[in-house]
Image (cartoon, rainbow, N blue to C red; front, side, top):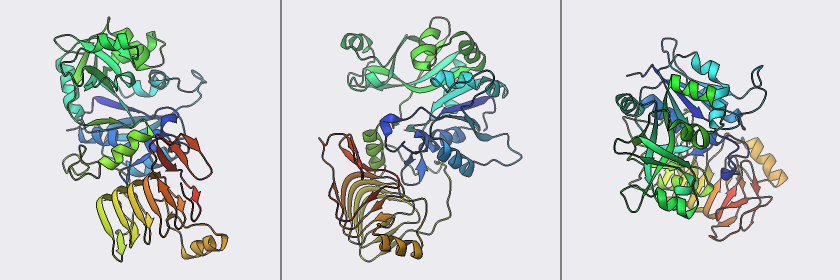
Length: 420
């Protein structure tokens, strides 16, 4: 049932430096995940599966590919009140600078947001992996007569410095909010949750506001960020409630978390299941042929997208994206390959051969273990890439190293025989 009185705002985020080089040419929500999706598909799908079908996406950095994906993937018919639309940062008579934070992004778009006349405004991040029923979230928010409700989950001490940490009373009302605390004494004082392994109550960055309260807070508080400014200031004057969430949730904020979350999706019993017929993950549906295999191939715990061709190769514990060309005689282990945006013609491949350039895909005899290969990369024959846990962060002509992993950036070329 459509939640026509809820407006969802998905924040596109900033430059996404912790996901570099995946964000070198694209916005963070546009980063591919699970072979065929984009990160932004997760909160959009949660909205649509919850009956929330009025969705704005606020964007600023490297947003061209994100805009293209949204326009291609999410179309509503003339008889529906639903929409998924971009609100891009812009210069106007009332504002001449870029978004300065999460709250400032929404403040600058208030005229468009107010025009929808929604009862509640749902604020989401574009870079989290989880399933959540926002209709149940809204029901709890209204039953508690809350002005603001914050979705929360228990967190271990090691993760506490990257969360907003809350304290609540017996009725789940928030009595304090501390954005990303790191001082040991402060962390000791905030360890109030009953689970000894996860003693902190962390904000998921998912907020539901009564619209009038949101507008008032943004008009009277010039703070630029919800976690740092708006929420801590609102606790004394507003009824701020916590909404416990018990499911899988992962912040795809770093190269390591992105890599591990992708590989976990290929597990036989993954914590996050892509295959849920009642709550599917939506995305753009390109017209592609069935994936084909030539010769004897071996695959174990692999997510394999449409339009791929695998030739006499071995692949294990990996994610293989759209239009990937693998082999022959390639060996891939614990590797994320994002695939390609296009197929090369025979004429283009002949030109590549003449110029000594590898074709798009993974060439013959390659051995790759523990890497992320971004879209349209060209990996030449007999290339070797190995994961070295203590490899220092570096950036070279052919690859970038982050968090011990090798990332071949979008469109990069790794020549024949290179060992990384």
